[in-house]
Amino acid sequence: MAARALIFSGRATKYLAERIAASYGHPLGNVVVTDFSDGEFQPSFEENIRGRDVFLIQSTFSPADNLMELLMMVDAAKRASARRIVAVIPYFGYARQDRKDKPRVSIASKLIANLLIAAGVQRLITIDLHADQIQGFFDVPVDHIYASSIFIPYIKNLKLDNLMMASPDTGGTRRAAAYAKILNTGFAICYKHRTKPNVVGTMQLIGDVKDKNVILIDDIIDTAGSITKAADLIMDNGAASVRAFCTHPVFSGEAYERIEKSRITEVVMTDTIPLKEKCKKATVLSTADLFATVINRVLKTKSISSLYKFEH
Image (cartoon, rainbow, N blue to C red):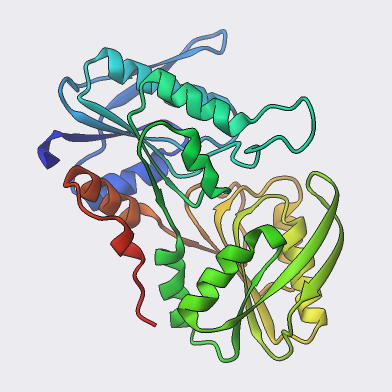
């Protein structure tokens, strides 16, 4: 079964796909994307994929061409008679549009799930979806993996006294509680009220953080408004230090400037999205070994959940 696997990448995530392929032990497959003068492009597999298990790696962050490129690669693989097509999407874009929060809006993450399946995706591998229920938007198997297998060892190696986990909003309460349980710590919650998207109006802290080394856990940092405001609130309430951990560093708008000027000691993230600028406070941990392990286990039909059994 393992001999059937071929790993390919779109242009947006080639930096990560090369590391995944190296960790898996096979070179990255050859895909050529031809650009046309009118803005169109055409991906082409430059090797035989007939009867092979094909893993296509591409995050779907902005611009939308990244999603379109993935869909076209899936279609090309299907028309080239690939045995099985698995989309590996480290960052699943539009995941925050997972419900109708007001009338007459799209549920974009469901739309993208439909597009991927219509194109020919037979399995999805992704990490830290913004909402777990997005798995239900797919009528194919979804291997939803977690960055906790990368973050937990890093946190333990920090050897911080009076450690405490925190969530920058109520939506991340479950995530912070899971980390707190594994690490045997307490956790706090920052309750925020948004005046409009990407703008935090008010924020309140639930929990005692005095003299604690606090770790803020989130899946996405976008404009960094919420995370830096939460860090200020925690420090104002007597915390010894604040660190932030996120899986997907979207980092748009004034994110870099806000982080550099913030009271956050360190921002730890994965490489699902490449950083556009240098950030002195950033520590990037690679997901390559994790994705390579999951690909191998999918091929060998082995358990993936065992990756998240931690020693307390």
